[in-house]
Image (cartoon, rainbow, N blue to C red; front, top):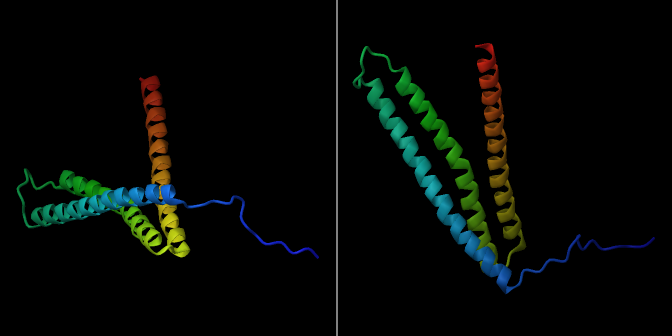
Length: 147
């Protein structure tokens, strides 16, 4: 039988210019990822602060806190949705910088896996968002037809 060695579909090379582009991409990803993580943490702290203020008898007309709780829920969900892409970007950047520094194939694979996860997360959120937009448009069309 004939033996073959698997060399992959393409013979890709990571030369100096590609390393430069990946390094710069990793630096920007680190900046965006850290900014997102800080923003997510600040949103979480604001939610906790406002929540504690509301629970401890913050000012309210007639004691109805539904709007405040809905706002807190919105900001809490926003903090979670901001956290994951930022975390994946940060992991991409850290692994890519280490891969370029040490010429480590496993680190390169880990970095690209994190980048894929970031885009997958954003893609799923985009699909969900577009689904809501379609439902709103359909709802508005049926709402105006019924009137």
